[in-house]
Image (cartoon, rainbow, N blue to C red; front, side):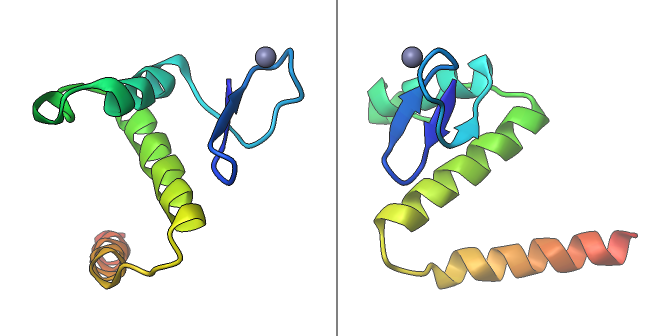
Amino acid sequence: MYFDTRNGQLSCSDCTPQGSPVSAGVLKAMRHICYSDDVKLFAFTLSEESETLLSAITERYVAAHISKRFKTLEFFKDLTRNREGSAL
Ligand SMILES: [Zn+2]
C-alpha cells in the first residue's frame, strides 16, 4: 500500500500508486490511531523501523494539512540531531 500525505489517500499497487510505500504494520498502526478510543490511542507496538516510517509519514501529513510550524518539534529534532552527531 501507498499513502499520499497530501491527499490523505491510500492506494494499492493495482491502482496508480501515489505517495510513500507503507508496510502492513504501519498501515495497521495508522488504522488503529484513526479508529481507536483516545485511551487506547498509543496502545500498539511497532518495530523501530516501522516507528520511524510512521513518524515520518504522520509528520509529513500534518505539515501538508496544517500551515503551522511547531517550534517544540523543531527544538526536539535539533536536540536529537545534535545527540546523534555527538555519538559518532
Ligand atoms: Zn487499489
